[in-house]
Length: 355
Image (cartoon, rainbow, N blue to C red; front, side, top):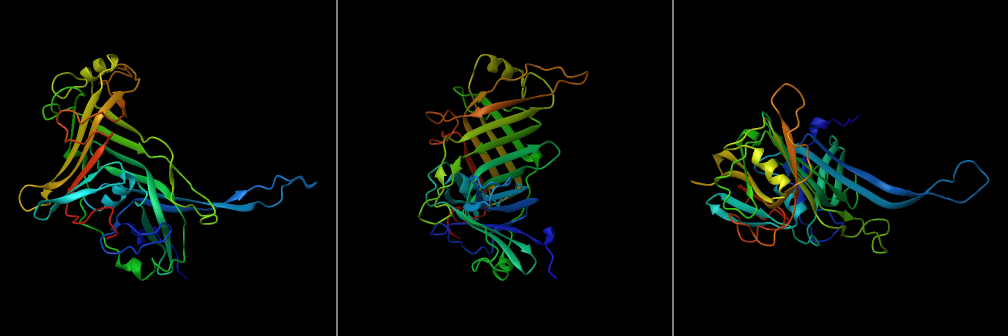
């Protein structure tokens, strides 16, 4: 008797696929370690509202299929690029130092950007597959004395247990890319007024960071695919927040008091989160790295220097993420649409290509 055991599964996500609703086989380099992952859903129920003389309704009619995807994992310097690119919609990539490659993720239309998610649900028996998945929520978080985590949620056009594409044979070919977790200790957080100079001399000392993004999409059920959705439809503006935690209230270099003053004066900010490994991705100068650029931020209403007890004053600030009309000083030209995420690693191909 085969039994499902969570520790036997490695989740895989492969970008690409020429046709919506048609899976691609996951294999070498498409896997990564995760704490939780799930494909869920099924046909919805259309209730029968007819009056029949009984106390209980007649059985519902099967409705449109509602599929969802979720992955929660420790952030790594390489391996999750395809998930991040799927959320943003584009990847501009290129070699930077022999074996090192840069990837720049920006918001773009996703009419041809989707991927397949698969994992082993029942050892050597059942593979769970989402043929076409688009992620619409992305959360990056990290705290002192820990590692950064990445959570992605999205929608799947279908969920299968009997795919002829991702099978018990193909799932055994899935491998994990170069694996290096991302300690919070390797992060540097820089922030300045939105109209001020470069960020190089503007460190802010934080004890925790969370970037939360949501890209609304909605199902597109029509006569094209019966009860299955065609390519998902954009559902509105991207919404995003940046939350930073401070271990103590302080002024001077790295201090946070000025941020409170700026908040009361409605001063917009810009920021960059650099997370840099001690290991080289290239031959000489390029290290494994995540760099997240936030060109225009506004603090949301907050408690002003809350005193919650006799200890040192700790507090948090949350910022709304917004577009900037142009890249601010210290940002690369074109880095102005709310958030731009860069990775530097050894992934040699585009993260949205079917490879």
